[in-house]
Image (cartoon, rainbow, N blue to C red; front, side):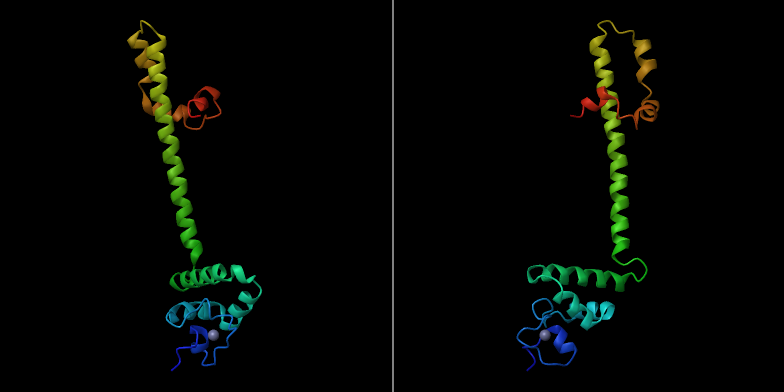
Length: 154
Ligand SMILES: [Zn+2]
């Protein structure tokens, strides 16, 4: 009976015109999608926002409006910013982990170089200089401007 109407027109109990701004982006078979943007932005505001965007970008805009509204409903305080912050923290943690691993690699390369350079290594001197990995990390973690160490990773 009402199968010709999009989710927006169905929810607003009106006829769906052939040039309906909502119709391509809010199909009748996904009423929840329109319900989310309607609850957060209001139906007429969503229509206005879509009208102001070039037609080839409207689908993308409708998708982001929907996702932002969905997360605003699920998390009334942070909305999608909560997810962005959480991902940002994960990136920061991964970068710290990467810096630690790069420091370990530099440490082992340095150890190997010392063993090669010193034909008859004095093992006591070598061990006292470079066997303390923790101290090496502290000394070198944020000293990547050192051109020798930096060149090992290029
Ligand atoms: Zn419609």
